[in-house]
Length: 340
Image 1 (cartoon, rainbow, N blue to C red):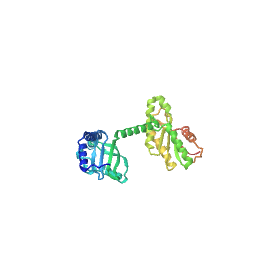
Image 2: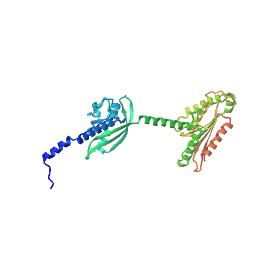
Image 3: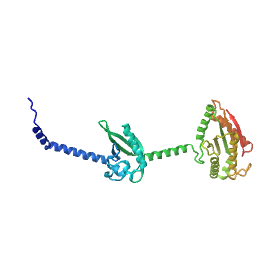
Image 4: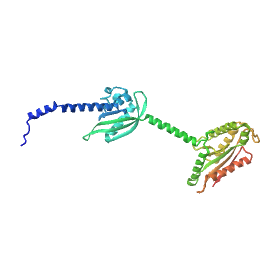
């Protein structure tokens, strides 16, 4: 028959257990674990914090107190975002507070990126990983971990800028800074496709510097390059809208794709361009038509393309207009509607 121990016997057993080496060992293990966890918490380089349901800081590690706010933990614990306005600008506090409230309402994890003014006065970019802390279905607060991604973002931006530069170099003529022949082919093909699909219309001009070979032969390629750059600058100056495309498609040959309301405006732009180049007063080697370098222009108004039309057909037709300008004495514009 099993006899239940008396209250006095149970009390005596408890006293013996409490005084036993087992309990002392257990207490020592708990103490070591607490010290270990605290050390681990403070050794982690990422800022970590815990707030209760009222947004009051209850815990944080050294990375948060030293790197983010630059003050001892004792001045953080028991405070809200708005109690620390000396260290957390209100505009940032408002953002963090709003995010906290969203998290409490959703009872889930949260991830977002934000700017943080750190203890060294520098603004850094952090990724926030936060989660509600729930016990027995009750939200007690939230835990947050911060990851500094400033260097990562800087590297991404630098790579983006380099990629943009590489992309720009791949479509740019190195001497003049205009678009190159490769990019010209890309754009003229796209414009040609639009003609048949949407009844799209545009102007396409080919330009050639008159007697440029004679100029190069007489003054040398260095002088010739300078002349090409000066003419290119005039092209860029006059055709500078987002819908204007100016290309160097050959040694002294340029192409322009642009859009205007009517043919008179298109001719006016080309005439202005022709005059501006002559006004550069670059002394010509062959002065048969002028004492200064001039340009000849073929201008086509491109419209109503058939479904099987291609950009080579357009180029050939405008090229013929250019040669008409040359055959008729140079330093002039020949224009025509082109339907293919």
